[in-house]
Length: 252
Length: 264
Ligand SMILES: Nc1ncnc2c1ncn2[C@@H]1O[C@H](COP(=O)(O)OP(=O)(O)O)[C@@H](O)[C@H]1O
Ligand SMILES: [Mg+2]
Image (tube, rainbow over all chains, first blue to last red; front, side, top):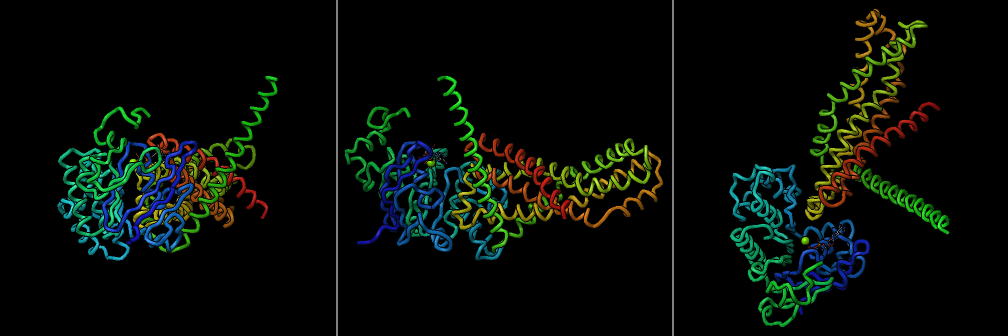
């Protein structure tokens, strides 16, 4: 039996009196595209940030390959972070740097300026942005283009694991479709393990191998995407049909 | 009973703010220690250091220069009024020089830069925090302390003394202009009095102060920005807190440093 690439075991996280995660347990297998769905504010971003060590869990374990990610320090943590690429919810592009410098940010550690720039332009082309954008600043781009630059930056160093935090939120349906295709493409082509957060059901059907539903601080259901319609789980049912009545309270 | 419970509430309030203050002091000390450590450990981002030196030093020159010019001028007038009963011509030049170099150059320069630079740093890092750019740095295998905090601290400590040295010269020049044009002193005597009375210790003590203030200014900007609360409001609060705490700490540090130089 293959071991999971990423494993969360009983992860808890509170902010003050507010319990956000109350025992999240989730396995992501190598080269699998896992999608986490759930309402806004349920702790989806906190979940992936606790894998990256950006948020310290109060309790529980986070494993990446054979390393305890939540306990890793120093060189061990650096080696761990080298495996990851991350597309942030708001893009999180460095606005004092040009587009190509953003994309090449990590490459610059091991490549010279010209080489890094060439590779960045290549990655930009890969996400459908021409070289004329390379010398612009992020603020000069539209929201959809910024997302694509963020995507190019996330995949620039060919990471083993890629996280996408709401890649299509705030984009029009056509641009969403382009981004979904890109994600599917980079995951199948690069053979990377992907963890995507979304509440867009179209995205789920396009990019997921497996789906996990986060609600009430725990994973309510997880399974292959094909079982989504037939699983009979009341939470899933309510979420994918977008109904106001059901076990998920609409007011919170 | 009511009085007793009000008293209780009063004590609890004091206790809570003391604990809060201790916790904040601890967090700041830890932050400062980490910042200093990363100034001395590789890798260094020299391009960032240079960029920050330009922003902190070069672009503060006009503000600091004008402040020094008018301060020197006013000092000359005031001392003339006070000193006219004695030998004004001998006193004005040397007191202006000593006052500017030991005290007013570093303190007023520091306060002006505090308003400009700690606010700018806090707003920048706060925005980076809120828009997840600081998290993004970490996921791109770059330590935010090395890339953001250390270059600013280094730039602050290195540029403030230079800035204050320029301010010293401009401030003394302000006094000279008033002395010669307004009070009709002899230019040569004024310069001679300035040079003869100033000691290297006067100048150096002011420059040491400037380095300390540079550290305080950039540290406060980084600390408040880095720990900024969420949203635009969080960034606004961070900016205000950075300026206020930098200014107060500069004045407190100035007293402590003056005591130190005074007793040696
Ligand atoms: N730094 C923080 N301090 C306090 N509360 C936070 C912080 N980060 C997130 N939260 C809270 O945790 C909850 C989950 O946040 P998040 O994971 O971002 O939600 P989402 O599922 O929409 O991505 C939210 O209610 C948010 O208010
Ligand atoms: Mg989120």
